[in-house]
Image (cartoon, rainbow, N blue to C red; front, top):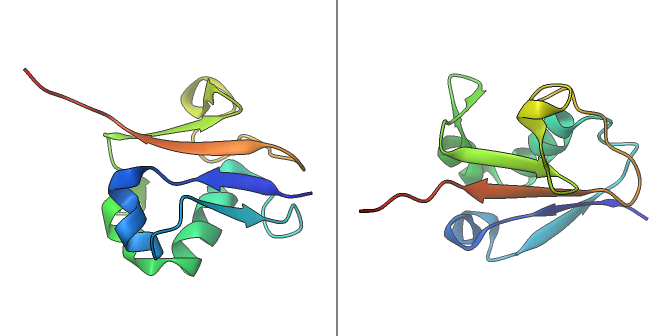
Length: 94
């Protein structure tokens, strides 16, 4: 099995059109490490997700439907085989 990172439609053009990637637990033990693997495989995502090494304010990350900000921190939440990591851009409007 693997960890699945789901890529939202607005970011897919920067990830060769893919909607998800699989990451092995050996490559990433935390959400932060999984996101680093993602931007390493798809460098175009880096500038759209990060500013000065921090996730942009409008980028939300969920681990198995839980906002990682309420777990062990944005980058420190541990992940394991079979987990789902979802990147959800904030939506605004009026």
